[in-house]
Amino acid sequence: MTDIAWIDLALASARPKALGALLRYFRDLDTAEEAFQEACLRAIRTWPEKGPPRDPTAWLIFVGRNSGIDAVRKRSKLQALPDEHVISDTEDAESDIAERLDDSNYRDDILRLLFICCHPDLPATQQIALALRIVSGLSVTQIARAFLVSESAMEQRITRAKARVAKAGVPFETPSPEERAERLSIVSTMIYLIFNEGYSQADPKHEAAAISDEAIRLARLMLHIFPAEPELMGLLALMLLQISRRPARFSAEGEIVLLEDQNRSLWNQPFINEALALLDKALRHRRPGPYQLQAAIAAIHSRAKRAEDTDWVEIDLLYRALERVQPSPVVTLNRAVVVSKLQGPQQALDLIDPLGEKLGGYFYYHGLRGGLLKQLGLSRQAREAFDHAIALAHSAAEAAHIRRQIDKMQEEAAQPIAE
Image 1 (cartoon, rainbow, N blue to C red):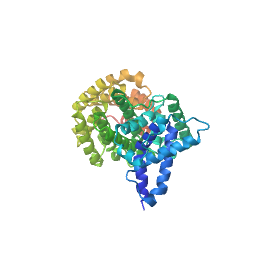
Image 2 (tube, rainbow, N blue to C red; image 1 turned 180 degrees about the vertical axis):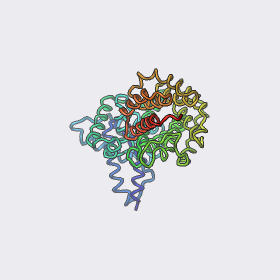
Image 3 (cartoon, rainbow, N blue to C red; image 1 turned 90 degrees about the vertical axis):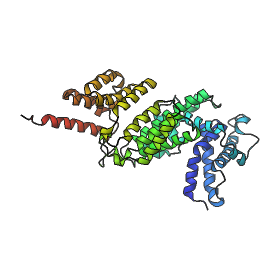
């Protein structure tokens, strides 16, 4: 007998590679997904009795492909079969598939699958939902709870995303090295979007918090099939360093705890150690990219045993490098925090004031601006900035954090002046 928990784990682990291969065979996302689901059902029925196959992924591809071909043939009266070279070959054996699993085709299968999910025609919310459903295999119920929407609304979102992908016509040919690099960059961005969607949640038991763990799993998968890509190393290192602080980011009451006030003994040291090793390996390639630079900034924070030990000069240099590599008003906004530490609030305020037009709808812009104005004693302007931030807050925890800043400012203003 085969343990059912092991079967569930094997099916989840095999999903990206098997589904990617089936997508290459059928060139249709719905057909590939249906074929994979049928293979999973057969696995659940047969593996407990007969035992697991030598290579579960190869078995799922083999069974799924045959099941998919049967399904297409049943529909052949209404829909023409794909070209023969798309759905069949002369080596239709599980053992041969197992021997070819490490071929570069399968690396591109997974990359193509993720690339489809983050197609530029899809808004970010649909990209994330589609990737979680197709690549990660999360249920619509799980994804809906994470996004705080109804199941029907999420089902419609995923259906619309699939329709857009089908209409867009994604190329299935093996990408050139240049195209592969471009796809890797787009996929990395999508994985980081998934991570941030979960990382922003206050409750680590909330479904959305688990999504950040899924993003880390996807990054590990990508790094496994592209082990020499320094930016993938940087991406994984960045997420590990950020997730290492999760136990200290919120109080027991769910209130936000700023980095400088966090109990650093709660940080996950094994995650930090793994991230630092990954970052060192990435930087040896001497091809620094945005994720490596962001990870290097996070690494400086992780190495400081106390907030006052933080090397702000080095962080400022890294942010300047990041501005050159990836110019962005958000990067400049983050560097302003460093400037406030090194030069004072007025210099930081001078840096971010020109960003108002671009970041007027950004919660953190108004929150930082309010904090700087507060330090300068400009209470009325600070209150206006804080009010803007509250209106743009994405969660109750963010809004409550800003309200506490307002309360502190009012308490300080009410205190009698010592003679």
